Length: 336
Image (cartoon, rainbow, N blue to C red; front, side, top):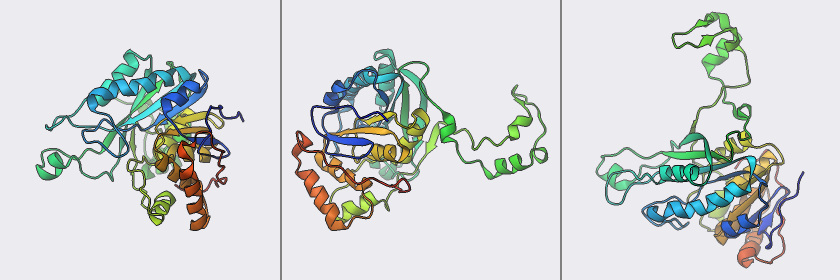
């Protein structure tokens, strides 16, 4: 397996397959060789009206700010590489009218940065709390916002992709059909023009997924949150669920490929990559959040050992020029 790219500064911590850096993603991307990254998957701070503790830009400046990263990502991707970006929706200030910032990001990336929209996805989070409070809870004139847009950008028209790696479980009805096709349908040409033949009842290992990804963002029982709570630390407030990056990592890369998260937060992406055998790099400017992200990679260590490791990491100011800290190798049967 290829080694990880080398940088002028040391990682905050590393594993067998990846490394996490407290650093500005723009600086780190510039150091990478062109055409060396297979996938960038990330969830940047959204362009919300209210300033969040994890950092976010005003809607008016957001598009140009995010485009700085987009230009570099396009340059660093392999020809068959992809850039997957999760963007939440927002309202305009003071009125119950939606902002179009996430769609303007899409248009700018395609029209000006040279990306192709391979496919648009929509992440439905059924556990998302009703918001915004003013329009949904108080005045009750809007429904709750529970869907994020997820743009799958590619460098060329033919990005690396294999949908068979992310097949969905068959419905009970489809399982019965596969078991005895003749009892459920007769091969024929449908009014739509589709020719449904005998091959329709073949077991292909699962169903082709749709571009609507229904993934709950509830991880109340995760080890990461449990340790944060036990040590009295603030968990990252805008984590995305592991199944979201997992879907794209499995579909768009193969073992040994290099995956990067440029807004790593609590490093869900890095952990999923470790489980899936992908090399990974995570960049995050908030030292505390990235230090706490090491909890995802720990297994059965006593809390005093975990606390000591965290204190060592948080004490490495910026992790610039410090020695590497190797975290224990994780087991691939762990759940986030």
